[in-house]
Amino acid sequence: MASPPPSTTEAEQKLSDETKQPETKGPQVVLEDAPTKVGVDAALNLLKNTGGVCQPIDPEVEKRLLRKIDLHIMPLICIVYFLQYIDKTAISYASVTGILESTHLHGNQFNWVASIFFFGQLAFEFPTIRLIQLFPLAKYVAINVTIWGAVLASLAACKTYASLLACRFLLGAAEAAVVPAWVIFTSQWYTRNEQAFRVGIWFSVCGAAQMFGGYFAYGVATQVGSDPNAALRGWQVIFLFLGLLTSVIGISFWFIMPDSPEFAKFLSADEKAAHVERIRGNQQGIGSRTFKWDQFYEALRDPMTWLYAFWVFAANIPNSIATSFGNILVKGMGYTSRESLLLVTPLGAYEIVALVGLTWIAMKKEQRLYACIAGHIPAIIGAILMATTNKVPALIGYYLSGGIPIGWTTILGLQASNVAGSTKKVTVSVIGTIAYTVGNIISPQTFQAKDAPRYLPAKISIVILYFLITVDLFIMRWVFVRRNRLRDAEKESKGDEWVVEANHEFLDLTDLENREFRYSL
Image (cartoon, rainbow, N blue to C red; front, top):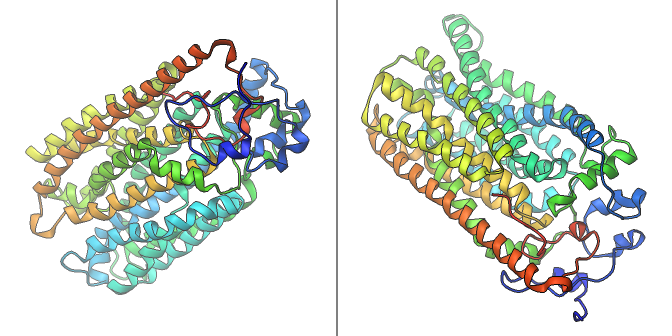
């Protein structure tokens, strides 16, 4: 007979070892007592209608429920992510619509205006770990979105290098919560198999933002830039329009977006209980507001955290080719400033096709990492073309780099599905965002003024980095396969002695603590 199990509190206070099987769990959780358990998931509150017993869901009911969730959740998530991308890249459009002349920037000052956004984001990431759990998620995000819209609009009033630096720093701080929050939203509302495609959808709006931003900036440059008597310069119109639009969306987010399925007014009590059953297979719930230091330390000690972070860091060092330096880079290929505003837009179109297509394939084949690697290979070829050619071939290479964001969607999807434990999930996501900000801080500095107009050293570094992040993806998959095999072997060796506590999925255990957890590939 199996020996008595440790208590839930004890289990939550020590890390599970990858080769050690926890003792068999105790009896089913009593829902009335759930709030007294330390840090259990909020999903237990939604199981009261079923008495905590696992209930099968009719496939048609589940299909209708998924459509309802998609209709209410995805549009606003996509709109805000669209705005956060175009808002932080608006500085690129400003670079060719008069901001350099109006604010008297010279040398590498524009590089620092681009980089300091990420210093602001970096400075606010650690507070975000706690604040994102402490406050209602959607309300906290809504406040941040409204503030960043106001700051973006304020950029139109900047007249000096110092004022640009201040506003860009605050803009980065306000956007710090977006990526961690979006990972949590995705894990709350979708099953593991659904998450990769949904992340692909909301991340693909970056491509749409790239297209819209280019056309919008071209229109502003043509209509406002050609009028010497206009009250505002083209770059000021861009900042004002995008900033005010973002603040309006932020206010709407407060009233429309539920903080979690527990508080979703568009779902009935039965639908909420059905949704919890839907996501039971995720081996994680909808979130706990209890901050757990053991989960925080586990995140720091888990090698997967740093494999995720390395990809994000290395992939974002070349990110300026799509953000701050996109237009300048295309100009260096032999095109005019105004032509560059239009020529950057196909990058966004290719990104949408690559992201949606490859994440759909990943969902159908359940092979996220292989689909991701398939998107990286053309990008490596494109980086070589940018470094070795000019004009049309270099421009084609530039477009092929649009396949790299499939890696970012894959990492975000894996953080949503393969990282369990509320505190651990937030911590891993924030570490990834820190890696993202550091990579983006470095990114503009690789485009030194002395290397203009070809920026050959930066292009060579892009080739090397694209190769390294592709190798990183292979290593991630190897780790996941190995962990799954070890757990399958452990379960098989225990035989009938393997007993799992009822509703263990909703005890806010981490992926290392919960030996029933299996990693998506």
